[in-house]
Amino acid sequence: MPPNKTAAPDAPPSARDGPPRPPSVDRLLSHEALQALVDAHGRTRVLETTRAVLAELRGPRARASGAPVDYAPGALAGEIGARLARGDRPALRRVFNLTGTVLHTNLGRAPLPEQAIAALELAARHPTNLEYDLAQGSRGERDDLLAGLLCEITGAEAAACVNNNAAAVLLALNTLALHKEAIVSRGELVEIGGSFRIPDVMARAGTKLREVGTTNRTHLGDYAEAIGPRTRLLLKVHASNYEVRGFTASVDQRALAGLAHEHGLPLMVDLGSGALTALERWGLPHEPTVQEALQDGADLVTVSGDKLLGGPQAGIILGRSSLIAKIRRNPLRRALRIDKLTLAALEAVLRLYRDPDRLAERLPALRLLARRPEDIETVAARIAPVLQARLRERFQVAVERCESQVGSGARPADRLPSVGLAIRPAGRGRGGGRALEALATALRELPVPVIGRVTEGALVLDLRCLEDEQEFVGQLDSLQPGHRSGEAEPP
Image 1 (spheres, rainbow, N blue to C red):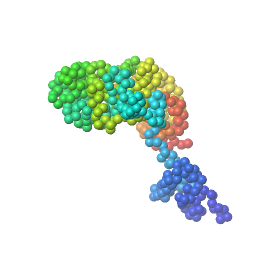
Image 2: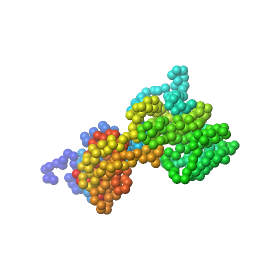
Image 3: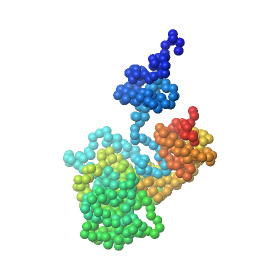
Image 4: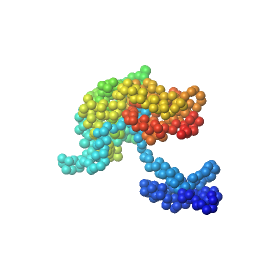
């Protein structure tokens, strides 16, 4: 630089003599670009982030790379701002569920209807009569807010609610069979998500498991022979997350209820998936309902709120009033109770069941499950050329028939005909698998992450659960799929 000229305003003074050096933190924070970040994020966070960025630029990795570094405050402000923005991004984010599993455990299961969202907002903004009896002007019981509605819909005598179905099973067993035995078929000792097993739940409840029958065959006589002086209930667990085929036998609810009542014992049925209506009406596979279990003689039925019921995460216990009263008095119930937001959302969802003719329109979980393949195919035909244009010649996008799954914890063996976009690497050279993984990663890095599934040499985006087509297409311009070598796409 000629001696009669000064350095650019953004350049640190040391840049005129020898290798450039990063500016001081104080000088950076006084720059207008950093001041704007301070206004947006607060001085403490900007100061900490600025120090972290400068420490990396001074670190051994940066020196070893030998790459030139732009120390101008304006340029550094860009990196600092980007880090602050990433830090402000919520951990719980919206995603596009294109996996083909409608009630996906890892993606939040059932989406809530608008009525439940409105009820959530009201309960979050204002004081409510959560445990206040408005008629009597005294302390009330939160379960009473839902009990009447649940009994109306299911025909149960009484009801109680906790935070999930595992808690419902735990609480019921702890109440009715503490230090005593509950009889269960070996074929029903299921394991649910996260390696959470029925035997483990029973152990934590203080109930001794009495297994009967074999993995594939259990008979009524097996239960009868196991009943003894320490028996407190018979437990039937619905196999909602697996299916055994072939040489099998199980005891139906009605016969099991008859045996239990003959010995003065209650029958408890863990249905899990939470169906409150016959799904065949919408062309879906049959799922045992609460009403069926109660009509067959079950004394207690436990279900989830966020599976086929279509509501928030909750555990619902329905059945005989004398048993529910004991469960309500259990001190453990306070640790497992639902909060006001869950209660508000669940009540709103349950009210939709009063109008079964419009249930599929209003309840998102049922609407997605009942969606017709031809309607999904129409959406796929519109999206395919847009996605193909974005992926260019490196991938081939095809509209193909596929199969959706109801849910990993609700009827996983049943398949629903669907339509998706099958994306395959162009050509048959090596590195196709890496290319698909790179594309799957790029889709997850979009503003609203897209979650699909890689199977049989293709990345499949099942469009059954895609309802916001415009937003999905609108963000495809941000897609930066890597080359087969793993390099970023050129501009």
